Image (tube, rainbow, N blue to C red):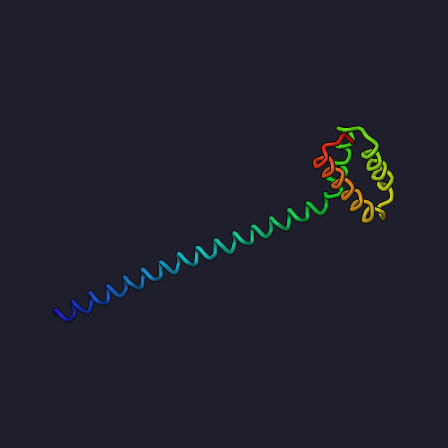
Length: 119
Protein backbone atom coordinates (compact mmCIF):
# COMPACT_ATOMS: atom_id res chain seq x y z
CA UNK A 1 0.00 0.00 0.00
CA UNK A 2 2.04 2.86 1.37
CA UNK A 3 5.25 1.62 -0.21
CA UNK A 4 3.56 1.47 -3.60
CA UNK A 5 2.34 5.06 -3.21
CA UNK A 6 5.83 6.25 -2.19
CA UNK A 7 7.39 4.44 -5.16
CA UNK A 8 4.80 5.96 -7.52
CA UNK A 9 5.48 9.45 -6.14
CA UNK A 10 9.24 8.92 -6.52
CA UNK A 11 8.74 7.72 -10.09
CA UNK A 12 6.53 10.75 -10.84
CA UNK A 13 9.17 13.08 -9.37
CA UNK A 14 11.90 11.39 -11.46
CA UNK A 15 9.75 11.77 -14.58
CA UNK A 16 9.22 15.47 -13.77
CA UNK A 17 12.97 15.96 -13.36
CA UNK A 18 13.60 14.13 -16.65
CA UNK A 19 10.95 16.17 -18.45
CA UNK A 20 12.47 19.40 -17.11
CA UNK A 21 15.89 18.29 -18.33
CA UNK A 22 14.53 17.38 -21.74
CA UNK A 23 12.84 20.79 -21.99
CA UNK A 24 16.10 22.56 -21.17
CA UNK A 25 17.92 20.41 -23.69
CA UNK A 26 15.28 21.21 -26.27
CA UNK A 27 15.60 24.93 -25.55
CA UNK A 28 19.38 24.79 -25.84
CA UNK A 29 19.12 22.81 -29.07
CA UNK A 30 16.70 25.35 -30.50
CA UNK A 31 18.95 28.20 -29.41
CA UNK A 32 21.99 26.56 -31.01
CA UNK A 33 20.00 25.91 -34.18
CA UNK A 34 18.92 29.56 -34.34
CA UNK A 35 22.45 30.83 -33.73
CA UNK A 36 23.96 28.53 -36.35
CA UNK A 37 21.37 29.59 -38.94
CA UNK A 38 21.83 33.24 -38.02
CA UNK A 39 25.58 32.89 -38.53
CA UNK A 40 25.02 31.23 -41.90
CA UNK A 41 22.71 34.08 -42.92
CA UNK A 42 25.26 36.69 -41.91
CA UNK A 43 28.01 34.89 -43.82
CA UNK A 44 25.78 34.63 -46.91
CA UNK A 45 24.90 38.33 -46.74
CA UNK A 46 28.59 39.18 -46.34
CA UNK A 47 29.47 37.16 -49.46
CA UNK A 48 26.70 38.88 -51.44
CA UNK A 49 27.87 42.30 -50.27
CA UNK A 50 31.48 41.45 -51.10
CA UNK A 51 30.55 40.19 -54.58
CA UNK A 52 28.49 43.33 -55.21
CA UNK A 53 31.38 45.58 -54.17
CA UNK A 54 33.80 43.64 -56.39
CA UNK A 55 31.55 44.15 -59.40
CA UNK A 56 30.90 47.83 -58.86
CA UNK A 57 34.19 49.18 -57.54
CA UNK A 58 35.24 50.56 -60.92
CA UNK A 59 31.86 52.19 -61.37
CA UNK A 60 32.14 53.90 -57.98
CA UNK A 61 35.59 55.20 -58.90
CA UNK A 62 34.35 56.56 -62.22
CA UNK A 63 31.31 58.20 -60.64
CA UNK A 64 33.41 59.83 -57.93
CA UNK A 65 35.97 61.13 -60.44
CA UNK A 66 33.26 62.61 -62.64
CA UNK A 67 31.43 64.06 -59.62
CA UNK A 68 34.61 65.73 -58.37
CA UNK A 69 35.39 66.87 -61.90
CA UNK A 70 31.99 68.51 -62.36
CA UNK A 71 31.93 69.94 -58.85
CA UNK A 72 35.32 71.62 -59.25
CA UNK A 73 36.39 72.06 -62.83
CA UNK A 74 40.17 72.00 -62.80
CA UNK A 75 43.12 70.54 -64.66
CA UNK A 76 43.85 67.95 -61.98
CA UNK A 77 40.41 66.39 -62.35
CA UNK A 78 40.51 66.77 -66.12
CA UNK A 79 43.61 64.54 -66.15
CA UNK A 80 41.67 61.87 -64.25
CA UNK A 81 38.63 62.13 -66.52
CA UNK A 82 40.77 61.88 -69.66
CA UNK A 83 42.59 58.90 -68.18
CA UNK A 84 39.32 57.07 -67.47
CA UNK A 85 37.75 57.96 -70.81
CA UNK A 86 40.79 56.70 -72.70
CA UNK A 87 40.94 53.42 -70.78
CA UNK A 88 37.23 52.63 -71.04
CA UNK A 89 37.48 51.02 -74.50
CA UNK A 90 40.67 49.18 -73.55
CA UNK A 91 39.65 46.80 -70.77
CA UNK A 92 43.14 45.31 -70.48
CA UNK A 93 44.38 48.64 -69.04
CA UNK A 94 41.83 48.68 -66.21
CA UNK A 95 43.98 46.77 -63.67
CA UNK A 96 46.75 49.32 -64.21
CA UNK A 97 44.79 52.56 -64.53
CA UNK A 98 42.15 52.20 -61.80
CA UNK A 99 44.59 51.77 -58.90
CA UNK A 100 46.62 54.75 -60.17
CA UNK A 101 43.47 56.86 -60.52
CA UNK A 102 42.29 55.81 -57.05
CA UNK A 103 45.61 56.68 -55.43
CA UNK A 104 45.80 59.99 -57.29
CA UNK A 105 42.24 60.86 -56.28
CA UNK A 106 42.97 59.93 -52.66
CA UNK A 107 46.16 61.99 -52.53
CA UNK A 108 44.36 64.91 -54.13
CA UNK A 109 41.49 64.72 -51.62
CA UNK A 110 43.83 64.44 -48.62
CA UNK A 111 45.92 67.34 -49.89
CA UNK A 112 42.78 69.45 -50.23
CA UNK A 113 41.77 68.67 -46.66
CA UNK A 114 45.22 69.20 -45.20
CA UNK A 115 46.28 72.29 -47.06
CA UNK A 116 42.86 73.79 -47.83
CA UNK A 117 43.91 74.78 -51.31
CA UNK A 118 41.76 75.32 -54.33
CA UNK A 119 42.58 72.94 -57.13
